[in-house]
Amino acid sequence: MHSKTVSLAAAAVLAALCSLPAWAQMKVGVVTSSTGPTALVGIPQKNTVPLLPKKIGDIDVQYISLDDASDPTASVTAFKKLISEENVDAIIGPSGSPNAMGVIQFVAEAGVPMLAPVGTAAVVLPMTDQKKWVFKTTQNDDIIARALVDHMAKTGIKTVGFIGLNDPYGENWYKVFSGLATEKGIKIVANERYMRTDSSVTGQSLKLLSARPDAVLIAAPGAASVLPEATLFDQGYKGKFYQTHGAALPDFLKLGGKKVEGTILAASLMLVLPEIPDSNPSKKVASDYIAAYEKLNGSRPATFGANVYDAGLLLEKAVPIAQKAGKPGTKEFRSALRDALEQTKELVGTQGVYNMSAADHSGFDDRGRELITVKNGQWMLVK
Image (cartoon, rainbow, N blue to C red; front, side, top):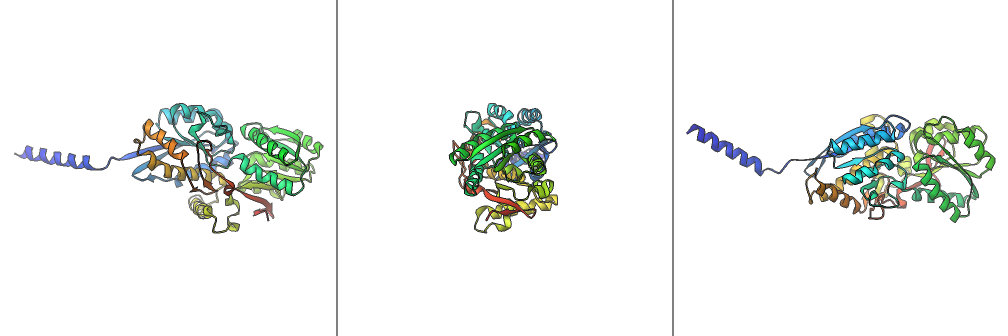
């Protein structure tokens, strides 16, 4: 009689457990360059991971964070590990443009959505069957370049010298910028390249000087953006300096000092948040992110960290939709997640508003940029 009672009780407990909603967990890989030449980009990205949503609806989210040391080969190794060993449903990263270009085929083959916080638009353009698995959480080059070219034209710039990284970031920037400059009648009189790891660009800067351009555009992210400008300043160049959104970090001001005074760039509103009106939909999101980051890390984040934070916002909106097609860990869920990300509309992020489509996996418009200058060692809106 006793054993029968125990059996009935056990059956009752089992039935109760079966009636509870299934526990679900989603794994998200994060690959950043928190060491190596791209560390100024990767560190704020890595430090942002604890701020990403740990629960989306009834799904617990586990983040697996890896460092690729700024090495594209290490990025491939990290992505393969996350896909084959950890069975992740999405990957945020990597930090560098060359690194991102090298892993696209692997996420496409595995059917795992990738949210890339990188500069170059080449990761999503032109759209291909492989790139349809990639979503970019930064402004595309043309949005930033158009603001710079318009400013050049309005201020009488007729000739420009270009110096950019010898990688997909620099190459795509030259392609986009040269086309827009031609439309405005601006002539590119010099075109130079350098590596992220270079400690000197003396030869390239001397060629730029000899071309006597009215302005110089530097296309590089992180610390690499400072070197050409500081070198040209030391060599006596007196023209105007322009930078891409890759220079949008506090260390640009620290490393450049007086040598970068007067620089013009188009970048995120995060750099000039006090000057942004409260009516801007991204101001509150950016302010909340900055406050949370400062509380956690004791320092103000670079905009690159916000690109990872926005990846979390995109997932937060897309995951509940994808869940209707399957459970995390399945091909059905990942495919539906890709589709849901592509259908994102009017999602307010830290740096703009996302409107994705099958042709546009960045989704930013002109609300995703501000024209900014360096004045008295601080970022200021161009008036």
